Image 1 (tube, rainbow, N blue to C red):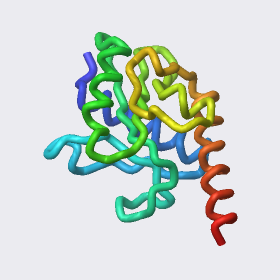
Image 2: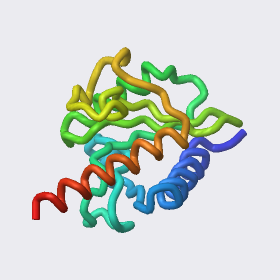
Image 3: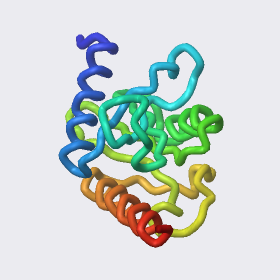
Image 4: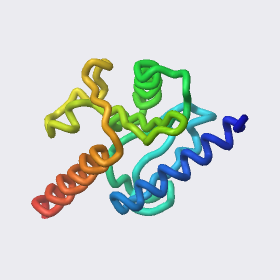
Length: 148
């Protein structure tokens, strides 16, 4: 039987590697998430909590066999309310690939709601999620360029 903490740490390491490999940004742990509550990780330009946010997603990650996707989403909503970021749940069951629960609005490129009820979400496999994340990076880069 694998220790839950070891399993979670291994899952976090997998995700960190995938984020950097797929979109070139760092998944950085929120150190206050245990003590004060909040999302697990954010996506930043450098592997440093003081680095600017690259994509405004508040990532909750789960390596859990028993939680339903609805329960995971509700927990993510409860953690993200203070941050004003967009909730995203990254989860992986044993012997399965990573999947992501995201607000449907981020896929369609429309304004919110970014914290919808579960019926307003979509479940994406890793390739689709990282494609959406790359599109967010492109949109942000275009906004910055046009603003100059």
